[in-house]
Structures are given as structure tokens and as C-alpha cells.
Image (cartoon, rainbow, N blue to C red; front, side, top):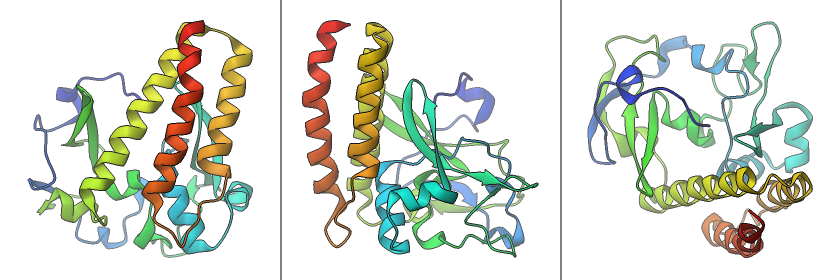
Length: 226
């Protein structure tokens, strides 16, 4: 999801890499779950998020859609997001104490917060969002320790490749204006990257890149219609 604001408005003015220290550590949040409420459709999920959810919860994507996840259009592309529900518009993964029931395998956006990603020149770096988290006196922590994912370089490669692939899809959709082509390719993307089950006992990355290669093969001819 693209934010139409300047980096100066929303950050401390710095860009960070994995080994940099940043004041992001909320010290366990200590009972606060503000960032898990009232978020609308902004907690967008990527293929790895779905892989981890289906693996650890032992459910299929369709089961997630029944209650915890929904589909919305993001910059022209249909993508899943965490569903907010109830009077407090709370994430369905919060327990009665306001703690995350899937914290160990929470989505990438949740894992990142209060950091964000700044994309430019085919890559990205991290920035600290200064208005989004109400916690004060946060501690310094290395970015890679805060995100806390296995094989962080491979994860960054995946994040980068998925982002710029979606940008390419959006550009094609905007250029072609062919509603039927857009509908069909959107359906293909949803089925291929989210609905089609991942082999959860196998490594995620080879499965993702196999699907990405096939999607690019289908997308390439669409450039000619744009």
C-alpha cells in the first residue's frame, strides 16, 4: 500500500539497514495493543504470511477467509489483509488480554512495526514511524533483531521481489485498462499465491519463486496490450 506522504512527515529522517540500531523496542508492549485495533484493511498479508499461518495453524487459506482474513483491492491488485472485527475493530488474533495469539509467526507488517519500509531504486531500507506507536522511551535494538526472522537476507530478497512484482502488475493494469484481462490476472494471482496450498513441510522460498516465475511468464505478454 502506497502512502502519499513525504518521509520527513512520518519518520525521524533516517533510513536504516539490518545491522543498524533503531529506537523501536516497545519492551513487550506491556499490555498495549493499540496497533492491533482500528487498522481497517491496512495490515496487508504477503505469500509468506499465508504460508506461516497455514503451517502453524494447520488450516487452509479458505478457512482463514471465513473469519480472520479478508480480500481487498490494493493499488489495483486483490490482496489479503487481517480482518478487524467487533466494536473495537480488533484483530481476530488478539486474545482476551489483548495479546497476540500468533506472535511467533505474526505477519511481516506486524513484525516490522513501528518501522516501515522505504522503497527506491529497486531496493528498500527501513524507517522509524514517529506518529504510529504511543509507547514512549523505546529502547534501541538492531533492526534484524527487532524483525527477528530466520535467514533475514533471504527474507529481504523475498520482500523486495514481491513488492516490485506488484508494482509491475499495477503498471500493467493502469496501462492496459482492459477490465477483463485485469479481472482474470487478479484471479490468477489470488489463486496462485494465496489459495493454492503451500507444502508447509518444505522451504517456502523455492515454492514462492516457482510461482513468481510462472506469474511473470503470464504477465509479460500483457505488456504488449498496455
